[in-house]
Length: 335
Image (cartoon, one colour):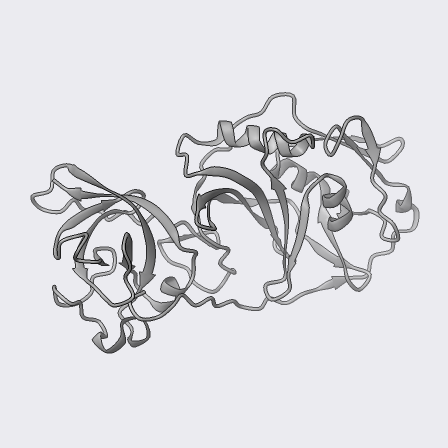
């Protein structure tokens, strides 16, 4: 943004706790086969046993994730849990080497070094956000991912234990699940053949449901891909490559744009989807540029907060301007 650092705004969702008796379901076992190490292991769930609800097995997220070699986290403000798998092709932990193989099949749009795969699970919401995270340098992370519908949502039981649907979450990560009814055992394994995820797009951050619905949002997350429906008059092809630019967002409000309000420095009113703020020492004023994944934009604005190799993209409203991580994109000037 031109005059304001990025804000982060979150909404609160209601949390429902289910008091569910485990009873005979204490006998449910989950066996990991070659996931966190060689051989097989039965997960020790401690005092919180797996349960079954509507023929679906739920397990405590922390015990399951840590036993499988994942990092487990919890965002109290958003009531969202996440599982993270480090991607390391040289790791002795099978699931980390598996995550690196998934990156190899995922995309030819290499942003940087594969860092991790995360699955975000919001309480009582049957959608999960799966994201492949790249280290793009200077401490910045960018990801590709998508929202996936599960057949059950994460829940709280017995006053506070977070439980996740075992098969649904395993499927999200491409792992196989075999259930043996006779001894109530779920066997979790890495797949024999690794297939590439499909229909992923750039994902910046989780947008809680109900906050904003618009053409640039899909199933609760912001894709960051907002190409215009037009090609500028007189522009026929991409020209000189200018480099990788940091991309931020601003809107025509007084908070984002200071005393300028809805007006640009060089071209009248801000046009979301067209106007960008630039450093005129790098991009000439009123020049058209092509931003990878965003399409054609015009250099109509500038500001004291715009740094070298930095473009501020005009968006419709303050919510769009203040949600989403900083991303990095290749930029070309029009020929």
